[in-house]
Image (cartoon, rainbow, N blue to C red; front, side, top):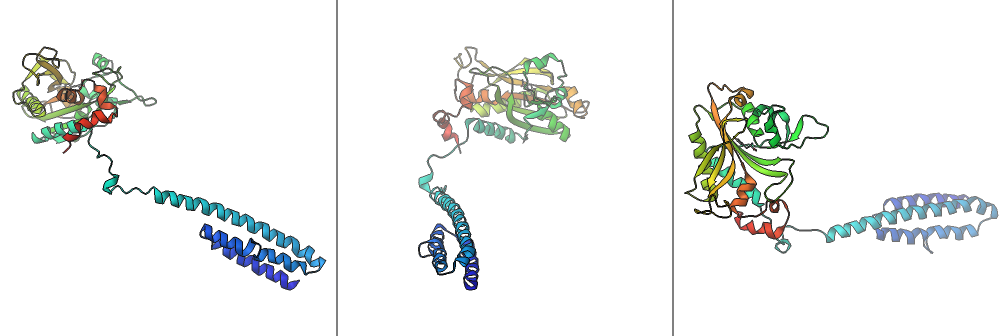
Length: 350
Ligand code: DAH
């Protein structure tokens, strides 16, 4: 009896050690054969028990049964664990995707037309000495309106159907890139010249030429004795370069924007015709954006001495410029992931 008891205790120990060292499904099978199979050590205990007295059978029988049951449970857990682990490893091995292999390159990616156009415009301004900066899309009312001389209840706010953020009474999605003017002038004293591009948002119905989100380009120059001639030359240079048309001219009409005085609407001579076409609706002029000389109140809001400095600002729709240059009939095409349409512009990638 004593010998068998000790044997069971030793066997229990070695079962535990073997269980701990299982490291694969194959090891699970080996373990089963060694301890639980027909010729395994646990069934062998029963054979040994058969030789013993009834008294010993009563004492050791339940211990052997318990050992068997616990060993089976532990082994099942190990089988479950290693089955999943080995399946995962197989999936991982088969799905390994080597992006550097030529055969795996299905189609080369390319920049979206709007990104290309944005970079092109930025580069034109960089060549004129402007620095590129970004303004936030989620903005405080102060930067989008008040500092730009559009106080609360000002009728000019009607033209900007604003998306306000639920639960944040002072936060909105910027309605124009003009907010970048204020961030720049708060951070930096003149002379300064920046260009800022990005998305703007208006709570408007969408149609072929409007979307609730579109892109703008803003430029701001503040220095001493800045004139409309500087502004006019800058706009003309930008448009001539962008449309690749050296004879393009611009026309400026009075327009109202609270942050500039005088404020101007800017039209370009139609880059596509001289006698009137569908692009310019027969007028030979295409309306492109707003501009003007920075309003003294805007300079004051940014603690810039308006008695010493003045400046010009301009804001154009990038989406509109892209539609015109590439003859795209509907602005929504630019925001839908239609590969056949978008891939037409792949060759523009450098
Ligand atoms: N922020 C104006 C808009 O979105 C466009 C604009 C007009 C920008 C005149 C300017 C400007 O910088 O001087 O309607």
